[in-house]
Length: 103
Image (cartoon, rainbow, N blue to C red):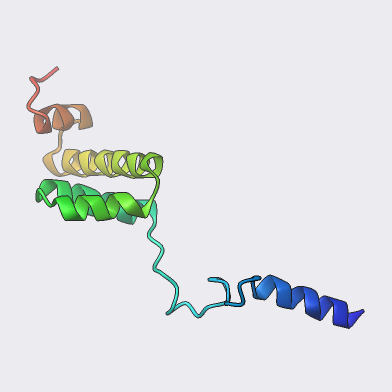
């Protein structure tokens, strides 16, 4: 019975191609995983600096939907931080950043 379990575990740990799976490789050998907030921060920074290479790289880290969510979250946090710093409402700060007249 234990032999069957060992064989099964070997199959799970080693794919049919004969190499180790990415899960079986040490963390130092695996490609770095980026989260959506890291991608959003890099993407927005690259956009602000007109860095197309940085934009393309950050865009490849996560799905377009995840990147959009991250950019939206970053925008919300930035507007809230500026509103607190300026002692203004988030709406007036957002409109000001976009060059829109006060509501």
